[in-house]
Length: 353
Picture (cartoon, rainbow, N blue to C red):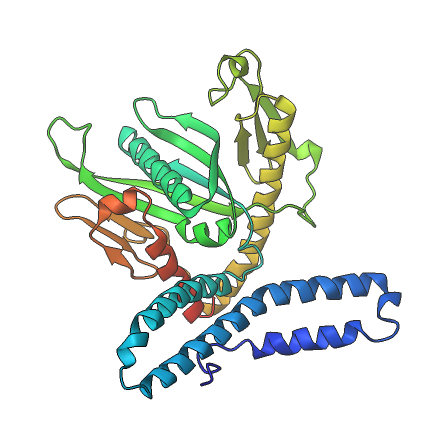
């Protein structure tokens, strides 16, 4: 049985064959730069094609076993083994499919996640802290390492804004769908009359770009402030102005870092984040130009939130971009957001985005 109709990596296979053929030609290594680039491409292609080829081989083996079992008088003897193999192959399939979807230029990168409370004072600050907990729990479940690099607490509760540095395979590719406006509807724990409140918080996700080419920062266009850290690190952090805040004057972007005990390290980290932000702005400018040509411009106003979380009078989490919804809001707030991420990625792939 052939599984070529289910998944096809023939294009990549052909490219792998071409590169292998090229590498054995006389004079291939005379151009060192070209040769190294070709070998790097070959390694990347093999990393993506070999697992699919192995899956296809194992599916063929399972199909042969089914055909063999059909010829036996008692095919049930093979049933348990076939079920076990198919269950294992299903897990492998889902993992490879997700990897195939996450093939954008920065999908494999680490990510910076910024959560900002919206209008509404204490309510919104508390909502921002709930989102922070949700992402921390998700990262823990997904095997990603999340570290708070900057945090401004709310005056009464929660946080005004907080920045996470998330590291791990496909951190940006998975979390990029969290970008947008998140709306909460609930009975407020801060309202003595137990009225229902609506709160908003925004989430921004940008990739960590290791080497940011074409991004130059003029020293005259930034302002660097230092202050006492209020983050992790204990009393040793508090004694000196180790926290750093960098303001990029032309754009108004403000980046802060206070998690390191060294002012120099905090400054280096903040500058790296600033460069990634500027690179992301340039990328979005290009996307906006394409969007305007398509005429698909959506105003930012009530009703255009990207996701809603409703605790009262019913329970519902709905992502308006993918259409995914669930009534198990407790699980979602406990970090079970992988189904929403998968739904978003599947939707964007089907639309060719």
